[in-house]
Image (cartoon, rainbow, N blue to C red; front, side, top):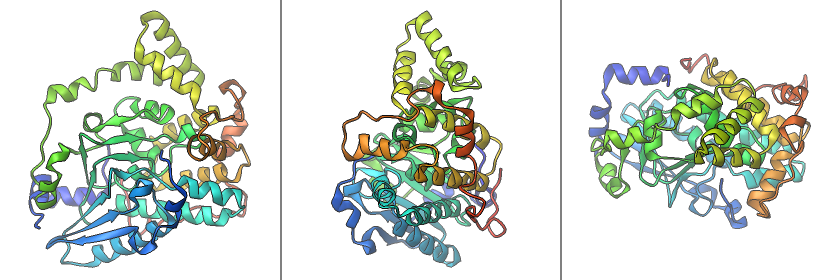
Length: 390
């Protein structure tokens, strides 16, 4: 996966082991999680040469809010400007790194007609994700536990990503009638072969070893050694290469099926392979594709394909436009329906509109990638000040 300009500066001046050795000393959100003390949603730890941002909403699996995004922007800007801070660390409280954006908050805001608040949510968090991807100082994310959606967006663009035996990664947006956002169309489109399409369309979960094998993570260690990593990040425990290689066994079949041009052709290829080989992976993948939003499947596939030829900022600008289409219901109510069925009421029986892939028209998909209106401004990112590699 391509790294960003800030990462190239790191490579020119520091090897990862040198950097790490210099450190010294889709989720279910309960209602009360929406009212967390704003001052404590992001905590800070100071070390001699680093600062650590701690995502601190453990009851909500550290789901991101607008306030958290704004606070993180201010913190990172001050740390970048401080010559006494060498690098930045991010981690989560409790059993999650970050389960993504607070979709329950969005669900309630949409149903109250507060679309401007939703726009502010996306623009604030996307801007912070771009800041991580163009950070002027090395960035280390400790992905211990659930790392999904927006949680990947605030970590994958950074310099180093440490996965553990407890890491659970996914981009499960199609399951709730949305599209893989938060920069996912950038980093997933740069994965080996067509693994990105598979992960984006199915929402399949990857563990820490999968993340290492695919390049989503840069380091791996057992969670029992996390106290040591807090003291000395350089003591990375890598796993046996043969075990890592085993997680790549299904890549060939993924490429064979997910390299097709359309969702219909991908499904046909999986059905053919399942009928020919009775392969359990093909069967389970087909089952998953039939559970998710048909519209989201087509939108996600096109998003990943476009992201393969775009920079991070271009992906985020496009994803912001797509997210506004998703929350305003101009194309479909799938996002609210998906959150209702899987997170709020939990009947796990979403009524997708359209109900099948065959009924998703090209015009519907095209509209998802169009501006909300001719007067709706696009997301503005400081690309002149913080340029990202392609």
